[in-house]
Length: 474
Image (cartoon, rainbow, N blue to C red; front, top):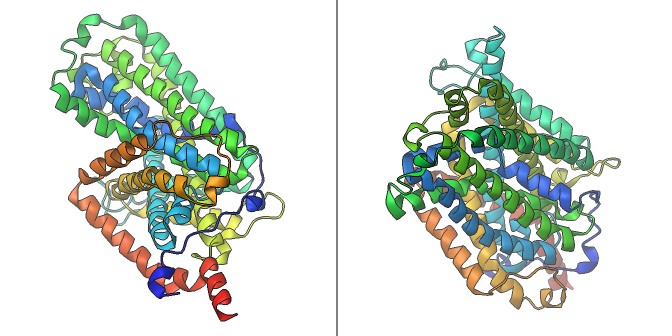
């Protein structure tokens, strides 16, 4: 086989191997939905509705979230078909490996590593900032050089974010204890978070003024779409659910429910928050760091501010749990294919958890969170996610044409095929094109580094390619 064709070798799919990964099967549809909500609904739900209303959409911010949810749901439908057809760890990486081949799968997998890695790091920095504010309320203040990374506004030239470093390692320790235990903690936190959001809505809804909804769309359709572009990024994270495929009791049934269900729950929460927030505070006044706290102060309900603050901390914690989990399972899948060293796929014989993968990913994330400023960390998150969404969307068309996969019974099919997958692909591509030039430059550097690693290690150790070489020598 020519070397150029070896780059396009596809991952063979054998349904007999779907249940032989060694990972513990402990998850169900409810725990998957809680994982998705945990990843999507973070501290941003207390901030983004206000920012979008004030700067872009006005009272129509609720419609911006509806548009974003519709666009995101198109990709979610494509993920649901893939996950119910190929219930294997690795999410979009595994799907692309199956329909497009190894080289493109590696590039996508490498991009997803950046998504999970920098998502964990950026959320940890925000968690640290919030926790330090709580400590300062008790008169406790960390030394300046331990409070933030060098380069952060107001930080010294030599800085290390100690709290961000510790919280990532703490979450890693939780995940090492087992999937069932960590998902139970996540589910409890997600319920608490939903109750806190419901509390705010229940309290504030009595102070809604119909006059605050006029003018409804002050910046026209352009502002509405701009708001939707920003709102779209509030929903990214549901793809982490698909990384759990091999740890689900009944993946063909539960995966579509978990992916689509989490998106529905999150959409309802974001839209409800937008409606109430704009109804309480005139939209031009919502361009503040914490619009929910501002709204509570305006209606003299300061007693609820502390509870909402708790919801913000819990929200960030669940994002850390799910994104750190997703990153470790991605490394597990890539390593199992031979494209990364064996140490990433070794499982603990008792917990059935890839312990080394979890600690390596956690330590790297914690170091990034401790030494890199937040604005630099966040640059790679969005583009890696959109790239994955686009490839999975267009990949459904090739999935339907795959000879082996046509024989596998899928419990979910994307409706209005092939129109919806194509529309989803174009929508994601459009959003990618509109990202900042700096983001594209950082993405190019990251992908170039990944290609170098692939040809130095992955290309030579690919398990599928090793099998092909053995066949050719016989």
